[in-house]
Image (cartoon, rainbow, N blue to C red; front, side, top):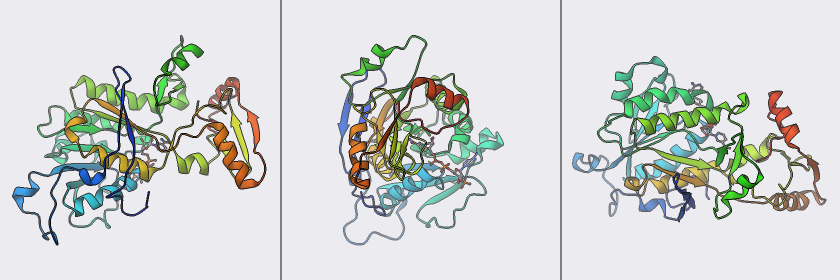
Length: 330
Ligand SMILES: NC(=O)c1ccc[n+]([C@@H]2O[C@H](COP(=O)([O-])OP(=O)(O)OC[C@H]3O[C@@H](n4cnc5c(N)ncnc54)[C@H](OP(=O)(O)O)[C@@H]3O)[C@@H](O)[C@H]2O)c1
């Protein structure tokens, strides 16, 4: 996918229905987005009658790594009058590069002021939060403000995590393979482990929204490619030509996604906003097996990578030590 203009980008996104695990694949163009097309040059200002009928999308954290990609993908939709965009920013955030066609509103989630948050989200149809890990819990007040919200079609909280499921005491190998008929691979995580509490925090936000009847859309993602290849924390060391592999990982698929692809997927979802509530989507761009990755490393280096066994005991030991080194997708 090209880097700068995602307005006609395609990305496949898989719907994983939370209730029964059924899936539908969508491959729509972002240019299908509900909105308005102008023949010739668009007018400089949008007539109120049109503006009031446009889908209004709010983005929280336009400055984050993912948020910047989402913002870049949404901007062409604004410039083609397909959506109205409101950037909800922290009071000190840098908003200097935001053009006048994008509305900006200050949003301070840490102030604990519900009335302020309610005002910030007035008139919004879709809220996309790309808040970082350390701010996941601050979405609680956002959920409160979105409760019984008169115009909200859906809230997309900051999840974007790989399609992992909580591991329970009773999980065994058979359970892990129970999802044979699903395209979307599941990995299990250990919700009790302090290092993985961020996944629990994301789930709590989703639970709170569901309990309050806030229309909710969960968007999951593969591991971000820049992190997967750029740090050694996922068990692959491109430079040193080494892979840490747990039992069976060479034949398993490793879900990967670039942030640009994920951002394009979000734009596609906005094409049909009324169909989004209470659904879970997963955007996976690449599904290489461990063998595929080894072949890529072999081609890069002219020799096979060094494979290092990574056992469950080592995984637990590394987590206990607070190290995220060598934690390949599980
Ligand atoms: N699937 C994957 O492999 C993967 C990998 C990484 C991240 N993710 C997920 O993607 C989502 C976005 O993460 P990200 O890495 O893109 O975010 P990020 O780059 O870490 O976001 C950083 C920005 O967040 C803003 N911010 C807002 N509230 C903050 C707070 N309380 N403390 C610090 N900064 C705050 C700051 O901008 P301002 O100062 O302008 O507010 C800051 O520049 C998260 O849900 C994360 O878990 C997924």
